Amino acid sequence: MRLTAALVACAALMLGLAPGARAAHYYLALGDSLAAGFQAPPVKPHAGYVDGLYARALRRQRDLRLANVACLGATSATLMSGDLCSATAGPQLQRAVRFLRRHRGKVSLVTIDIGGNDIGAACGTGLSVTVQCARSALVTTGTNVSKIAHDLRAAAGRQTPIVAMNYYDPGLAFWLQPSSRAVVPETLSIVDTLNRTLAHAYRSADVAMADVATAFASHDLRHTTALAGHGRVPVAVANICRYTGACLTPQNNHGTALGYRVITRAFLSALAKVGEHLRGRIDA
Image (cartoon, rainbow, N blue to C red; front, side, top):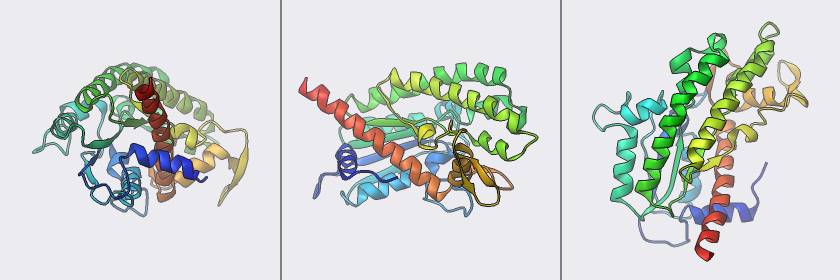
């Protein structure tokens, strides 16, 4: 899974990465533990997709600065009202809007992932989550994320690339337990509803979407591949085990180093499309 040179170049342009550029620019990131870079064992700081995007950007623009205000455990509600990381600095959204206004025209990229913790906060985790509870919780998620997206867009302006992501399904790990395998279609349904909710909210504010669910082949239960210790399993199951710690004991739903690289590539693909969109808008 390699990006073509053209795709990398296009994404680089959207990051404001003109070789030799001297003006200070910024990459602003916000969201939950995925944006914070929390990694499945071995736990390693600064190893998430944000750090991958920033490292790639820094190779082309040495004065690019990263401002990452993400917080572990953040939900769409706490991103607006305050979480464990906001005691002195204030809620993420408030900090991000203030940063965008202060550096308007100098922010080359904004990324966000939020909403993945909303269902757990409202409905519990694991086998206790029901489709009915999840769908009820996601009504609030849709309202919150729409406000977040519109506030970011208003503060950033129309020309600043803002890219969000959808989510993979850690529940695919249940496939490895014959007694729990039947719940996999239900967990996929819940994550699909979450991702549709996010897509609608972000689209309303002209925020692009990195399709992580597709990058993880979350629905490929038909084709199989070898997974160490389990024989042949569906591709979607193998990917969730390789790209996250969802199949470990104890379970860790965050990305592995490989998983974060896959997420980074999904963001770069979305950025390339943003570049085409903005060029079309300018040329119109």
